[in-house]
Image 1 (cartoon, rainbow, N blue to C red):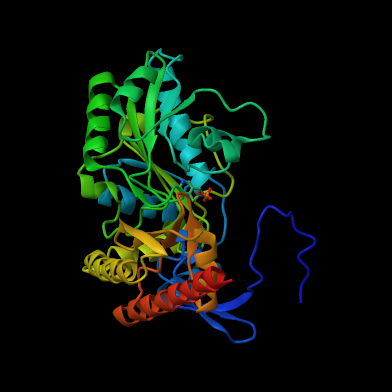
Image 2 (image 1 turned 135 degrees about the horizontal axis):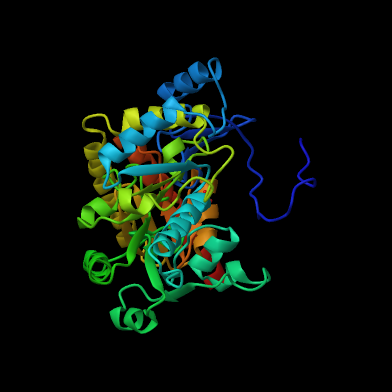
Length: 400
Ligand SMILES: *Cc1c(COP(=O)(O)O)cnc(C)c1O
């Protein structure tokens, strides 16, 4: 047994210790198997140890790991070309995490106006329930008091309004407004879908005022909703987009995507990263896209997502004291609970299934995109047993 006492206590960790993974399954050192419907929080998009990713890592590890961004990195150019070919974007900047991708988007947006002689245009408007990361900049962007508390003054230039509230938005807008940043579906906030109409309205306001639209697709992207990016469902394109999580399939990779015009503001010296976009990370990103962009893969995510969502809806019907509602799209699903979501996650774990709690008392169900129909049925059966387990507990409390 290793000791956890050497670590910062910033996580309330379970005491599960996994030492291997295969597909949707994680296995502890003593041989217990868990069906992973958390995917390391939407990271293991292709499950654990996907053979194509393992092969890509091994091949790259024997060739070249890291060179600095002072030199050309062909693997980076190739992944950039594939991302731009598949999206609204003309340019890509690579980094190592979601928060860094958002920071890059925020900096690019502000610098864009600075370059146009409008340095006072720095305000970024974001939306209640948002999550954009844990750096000082991105906790200010997210605006949630629980993440800001105790960390000194909130970085200026960020204001939050309720998603969907156009009047509130117009009230905080002014000559300082540079951009809006929004997750097409709030992940951490509880799998809350932003209505398509509101995304369209934001795009229209941006087109009228010259403001920039930033999509945070760190959780929703790389096929999670059954499209490469969730905003494709709404038919609304951003000017900047933050991507991470699934892009590396478990290897830390982030990216900020932008139109040519906006990307042009980050000239040499304005921004940088030591590790971002190194050959090792790029090899994995390329391998992830090989699979996600293969013909038929995203359609399958859509089909499997519908099937899983139907099964979850069935569970809401059979366990009305435990569950309230099913949310989400593709394999970015959530169950709003009547019992504390954290307790349900514990009951699911006791049935050998891993899920992730979110805001708004929601349990997130984010399996690898490679999950099979049989595994979806298995997952639903485990969730059913977990709900029955909680009903027994409730009955026990009622009788006591
Ligand atoms: C996870 C997440 C982030 C932060 O990503 P990190 O890699 O943890 O920095 C930002 N935005 C959204 C929507 C996320 O889901």
